[in-house]
Length: 340
Figure 1 (cartoon, rainbow, N blue to C red):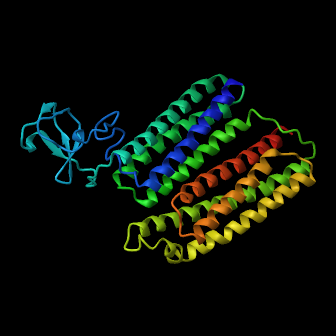
Figure 2: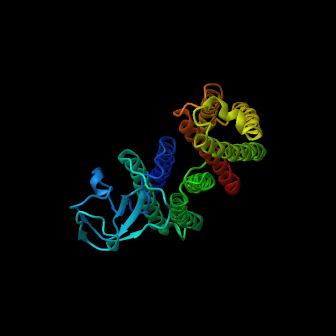
Figure 3: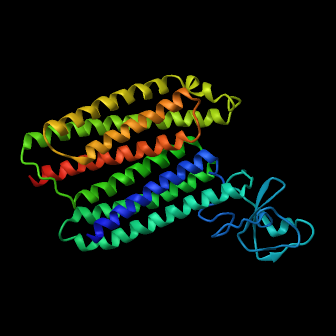
């Protein structure tokens, strides 16, 4: 079905945003573009440093942002520069005072935004095509509209993240909204799938465990984002070169996060057991358990091997996939319950 495939493409695009965002965060590229939605005033940022760092005998357009004496300035008009920096042609950039340029950081951040724009466009297309389902199932159209609104709000939060110079709390909110969007899309996809389970008690029992699993995973992700916030702060402090000490310095929040990982494993083991015992043959449950094992593995590596950079985004990405699979299983069972 075309619309279902469109929803799946939209879901994949949101995951690509999470992946790109993780890469941006781990490479320190979040301020690669000081403004939003443009990048140094460009729709497509240049690799030429002379376009970003002010230089004499150069052409500039209205709205272009340059770095001069470690400060950001916005061009008031189109003009050609003389030998000296003429302050009358520029106004000081007031959103923040972060004035650094690294072409690789700029393009990492730009690609992240580009993927976000593509994802937003896909969500818009989904909403347009969902209108034909209004008479059949209003929930499909309403969810598509809510997804689109959430994407617009996510873009707004992305702008506040940049203008706050990457405050960890706002980055965390940015991430949680992304997970909320994946849930909305997953719920919409579930309307196009039908589970055939005749035993009503089986439905209720299994659904209860899935809900418990999802609640625990959500709490685990929240604690994980708080740990990540503290890690980000430590990475910019005097302890930035002592990565092996970071988790010890985080303290109780990390201990809770690690303890919840055991609880996540136990609850999902119960899901695997019930899936086998009740002969539900739900492939998603097996895939879910595989991702839980991978997630635990990445967590163990970070705990005992000094927080290697590569495993930080992997840990976040696998947690997002895990959360989405759990949501998908739950929504499938909710639809079974409603249609029973």
